[in-house]
Amino acid sequence: MRHSRIPVLAKITARDAATSTLRALAQPDPAAPVVVVLPAMGMSARNYTPLVRALHRAGLTVVTTDLRGHGESLPVPARGVGFGYREIVEEDIGAVLRETAAAFPHAPVLLLGHSLGGQLGLIHCGLRQPRLSGVVLVASGSAWYRCFGPLAGPRRLLLSQVYAAVAALLGHWPGERLGFAGRESARLIRDWSRQVRTGRYEVPGAAGDYERALRRVALPVLAVDVAGDALAPPAAVDHLCAKMPRADITRWHYGRDDAEGRPLDHFRWIRHHHGLIERITAWASQVVAAQPSAR
Image (cartoon, rainbow, N blue to C red; front, side, top):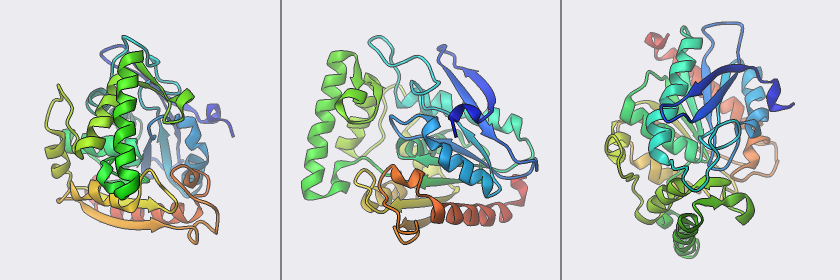
């Protein structure tokens, strides 16, 4: 079904006039757990509609939004339109969680982050300490090139620095034409390429140390690596998880047997999600039951 059939929950305008739209499929029970889905780099929220509907059928309220500059979020990246990790971590995610809490005040809230959405969601959790019951990471790992092996790693390092240079030259990254991510802000690509190179989340002008913020994350985390995923292999997921020594981390591999034999990779799991939905809902139920104060 079309993304437009998911009802609008709220419209958000940031301090710098960037706008975004929250959509939600709500359960009749106002205390039903809420899952907020944060997309991957270059992915619009509407791409997650099959996952959203499956989570809703499993009894969860689901909230979606676009990362800045994608889908229904404006402005579109261009020369002179600058934003990066800092705006998403320190402005956008907090606004999404505040609107969600206002709409569902009696429900426990969890984040579900895919790829970059998971990484930035975790940093927000450590930096701002929002009231959440837990975080689910799916195909979300550190971009550090050393997580990708002796052959793919150096290639990834080289390409990331080329991408950053191209983005700086053009004023944006034309990923929709060059086959990596979507149309991205030059500064966001610079932030990403820095993490590819150093393994650290270091953002100039940030409100705090993002690496220290990750060390402050003390939430339950379900971290799922996906079979066939060349963009977030198990080593990359492990590297991200190692940055959170205080978190209660559950690691799981989502394989083709879990997906009823369907092919999987960094994106296909969104549609081939049968076994994953079962695992997420079971884990969420356990987490919420162990945190009665979250209600």
